[in-house]
Image 1 (spheres, rainbow, N blue to C red):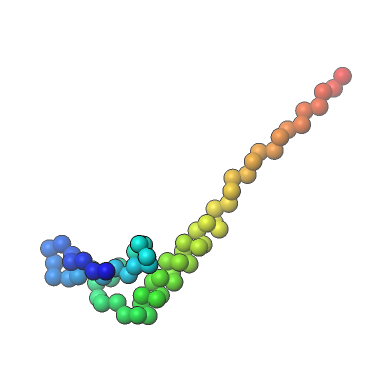
Image 2 (cartoon, rainbow, N blue to C red; image 1 turned 90 degrees about the vertical axis):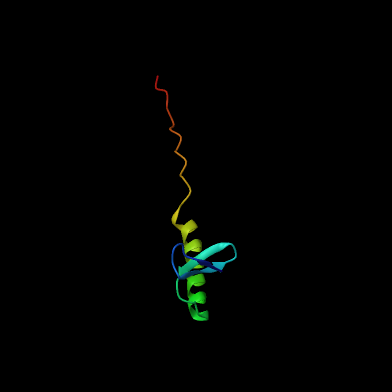
Length: 67
């Protein structure tokens, strides 16, 4: 996808993976650049859920009555 930059003669090229922007650059991207950008995006999205663990439930305290 490409779009002109405001007040300039340059065109910004967007490397897309579906509806997600993988990378942006001003020069025309070649195939290896596109493949590398998509690999980096997919690696980042797959690594993100593993970093966040579920919140741990607090343990219930057992209270013993003494007589």
